Length: 147
Image 1 (cartoon, helix red, strand yellow):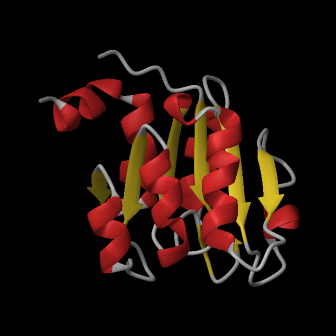
Image 2 (cartoon, one colour):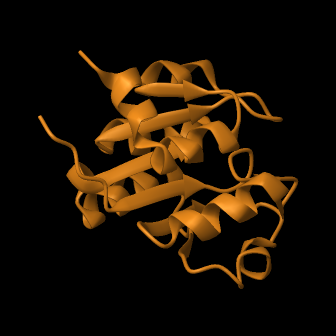
Protein backbone atom coordinates (compact mmCIF):
# COMPACT_ATOMS: atom_id res chain seq x y z
CA UNK A 1 0.00 0.00 0.00
CA UNK A 2 1.41 3.36 -1.03
CA UNK A 3 1.02 6.14 1.53
CA UNK A 4 0.87 9.74 0.33
CA UNK A 5 1.25 12.30 3.10
CA UNK A 6 -0.16 15.77 2.41
CA UNK A 7 -0.49 17.06 5.98
CA UNK A 8 1.81 16.91 8.98
CA UNK A 9 -0.02 17.66 12.23
CA UNK A 10 2.20 18.59 15.16
CA UNK A 11 1.66 19.02 18.85
CA UNK A 12 3.44 22.12 20.17
CA UNK A 13 4.81 21.92 23.74
CA UNK A 14 7.03 18.93 24.28
CA UNK A 15 7.11 18.22 20.55
CA UNK A 16 8.37 21.24 18.59
CA UNK A 17 8.63 23.61 21.56
CA UNK A 18 10.03 23.60 25.07
CA UNK A 19 8.39 25.77 27.73
CA UNK A 20 6.45 27.60 25.01
CA UNK A 21 9.51 28.47 22.89
CA UNK A 22 9.96 26.93 19.44
CA UNK A 23 13.06 24.74 19.36
CA UNK A 24 15.87 25.98 17.11
CA UNK A 25 16.23 22.65 15.33
CA UNK A 26 12.51 22.67 14.49
CA UNK A 27 12.69 26.13 12.87
CA UNK A 28 14.85 25.10 9.92
CA UNK A 29 12.98 21.86 9.37
CA UNK A 30 9.53 23.48 9.45
CA UNK A 31 10.65 25.93 6.78
CA UNK A 32 11.86 23.07 4.57
CA UNK A 33 8.80 20.90 5.13
CA UNK A 34 6.37 23.74 4.37
CA UNK A 35 7.63 23.61 0.77
CA UNK A 36 6.24 20.09 0.31
CA UNK A 37 3.57 19.54 2.98
CA UNK A 38 0.77 21.48 4.61
CA UNK A 39 1.82 21.89 8.24
CA UNK A 40 -0.55 22.16 11.19
CA UNK A 41 0.13 22.82 14.86
CA UNK A 42 -2.61 21.83 17.31
CA UNK A 43 -2.06 22.91 20.89
CA UNK A 44 -3.62 23.87 24.19
CA UNK A 45 -1.05 26.71 24.11
CA UNK A 46 -0.20 26.28 27.78
CA UNK A 47 2.25 29.21 27.73
CA UNK A 48 0.19 31.49 25.46
CA UNK A 49 3.10 31.82 23.03
CA UNK A 50 2.27 29.68 20.00
CA UNK A 51 0.92 32.36 17.66
CA UNK A 52 3.85 34.69 18.29
CA UNK A 53 6.44 31.90 18.04
CA UNK A 54 5.02 30.61 14.74
CA UNK A 55 4.02 33.90 13.10
CA UNK A 56 6.83 33.73 10.52
CA UNK A 57 6.10 30.18 9.37
CA UNK A 58 3.84 28.93 6.59
CA UNK A 59 1.58 26.72 8.69
CA UNK A 60 -1.84 26.53 10.31
CA UNK A 61 -2.20 26.99 14.07
CA UNK A 62 -5.18 25.53 15.91
CA UNK A 63 -5.49 26.52 19.56
CA UNK A 64 -7.69 23.93 21.21
CA UNK A 65 -10.88 25.22 22.78
CA UNK A 66 -12.82 22.24 24.08
CA UNK A 67 -12.66 20.48 27.43
CA UNK A 68 -11.40 17.33 25.68
CA UNK A 69 -8.20 18.08 23.79
CA UNK A 70 -7.68 14.41 22.97
CA UNK A 71 -10.90 14.21 20.96
CA UNK A 72 -10.39 17.68 19.47
CA UNK A 73 -6.97 16.70 18.11
CA UNK A 74 -8.38 13.46 16.71
CA UNK A 75 -11.25 15.34 15.03
CA UNK A 76 -8.80 17.83 13.50
CA UNK A 77 -6.85 15.00 11.83
CA UNK A 78 -10.10 13.39 10.72
CA UNK A 79 -11.26 16.65 9.08
CA UNK A 80 -8.03 16.83 7.06
CA UNK A 81 -8.48 13.21 5.87
CA UNK A 82 -6.52 11.00 8.23
CA UNK A 83 -5.30 8.79 5.38
CA UNK A 84 -3.21 11.74 4.14
CA UNK A 85 -1.93 12.83 7.57
CA UNK A 86 1.10 12.15 9.68
CA UNK A 87 0.81 13.23 13.30
CA UNK A 88 3.60 13.95 15.77
CA UNK A 89 3.23 14.29 19.54
CA UNK A 90 4.35 13.14 22.97
CA UNK A 91 1.52 13.50 25.47
CA UNK A 92 -1.56 11.60 26.55
CA UNK A 93 -3.76 14.03 24.65
CA UNK A 94 -1.97 13.06 21.42
CA UNK A 95 -2.88 9.35 21.55
CA UNK A 96 -6.04 9.45 19.43
CA UNK A 97 -4.45 11.87 16.95
CA UNK A 98 -1.50 9.50 16.44
CA UNK A 99 -3.79 6.50 16.07
CA UNK A 100 -6.10 8.30 13.63
CA UNK A 101 -3.33 9.51 11.30
CA UNK A 102 -1.94 7.09 8.74
CA UNK A 103 1.47 7.58 10.40
CA UNK A 104 1.74 8.46 14.10
CA UNK A 105 5.11 9.50 15.50
CA UNK A 106 5.90 9.79 19.20
CA UNK A 107 8.72 12.08 20.33
CA UNK A 108 10.74 11.27 23.43
CA UNK A 109 12.06 14.78 23.91
CA UNK A 110 12.90 17.12 26.77
CA UNK A 111 9.57 16.40 28.46
CA UNK A 112 9.77 12.68 27.81
CA UNK A 113 6.61 11.05 26.52
CA UNK A 114 3.59 9.25 27.83
CA UNK A 115 4.10 5.49 27.72
CA UNK A 116 0.55 5.16 26.38
CA UNK A 117 1.39 7.55 23.54
CA UNK A 118 4.55 5.62 22.76
CA UNK A 119 2.53 2.40 22.46
CA UNK A 120 -0.08 4.11 20.26
CA UNK A 121 2.49 5.32 17.71
CA UNK A 122 3.84 3.74 14.53
CA UNK A 123 7.30 5.26 14.98
CA UNK A 124 9.21 6.55 18.01
CA UNK A 125 11.95 9.19 17.65
CA UNK A 126 14.37 10.66 20.18
CA UNK A 127 13.94 14.23 18.95
CA UNK A 128 11.82 16.46 16.77
CA UNK A 129 14.74 16.73 14.33
CA UNK A 130 14.77 12.97 13.81
CA UNK A 131 11.01 12.90 13.35
CA UNK A 132 10.82 15.77 10.86
CA UNK A 133 13.81 14.51 8.89
CA UNK A 134 11.81 11.34 8.15
CA UNK A 135 9.72 13.48 5.79
CA UNK A 136 12.75 15.05 4.14
CA UNK A 137 14.58 11.75 3.70
CA UNK A 138 11.57 9.58 2.96
CA UNK A 139 13.64 6.42 2.49
CA UNK A 140 13.98 6.43 6.29
CA UNK A 141 10.21 6.22 6.60
CA UNK A 142 10.08 3.39 4.10
CA UNK A 143 12.81 1.47 5.92
CA UNK A 144 11.16 1.87 9.32
CA UNK A 145 7.63 0.98 8.21
CA UNK A 146 8.53 -1.79 5.78
CA UNK A 147 6.60 -4.98 6.42
